[in-house]
Image (cartoon, rainbow, N blue to C red):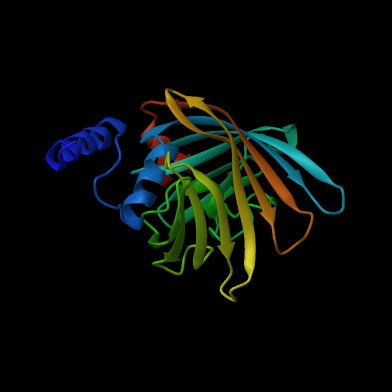
Length: 239
């Protein structure tokens, strides 16, 4: 086979397989991961199973409304004692409302989400490309290992190491505290279709600071589509 013919064949195969002709940057990979994991706007139903090293635990269920360019609202529907509680995040600002409290309470993204192994930011902030700079630590046929460094001090973790597969889905995220110690680990599993998009349906958060503590989050449903954006505003939230 002549060299010119070989070049045409290789180029055709690359195009057919959808493989980029040039190496991708870390920023592009993180952006593609964000796109793979999220719809621009929609609703979700989530289940939470929180497990403590002591053997205690609890289960919660919540409905989430979000628009990536507006905000995220989490409303708890069970158990009965948590029903009616809600959390709103807009940018770096966050509030919690409750039927038993007349005024919403300001919160920090670094605080524990309802006493689980998640932080509020882990649960409410669905994208990484807007908060972190990235570099590729290694790559293989399976995917990439990336190091993410925070651009601002308001996020809970100054550094993360993320394994991303070739479908741009996260496999594992390891979060580090300011001290450099591992703070927690998120493992993603049970990939399935949601609205025609493949993504993990289970996130398991392992608390590295307290052995035996973990929280399992199940994505019971994800539906894309317009939501009531008034509810994603401070005005709508505080009514």
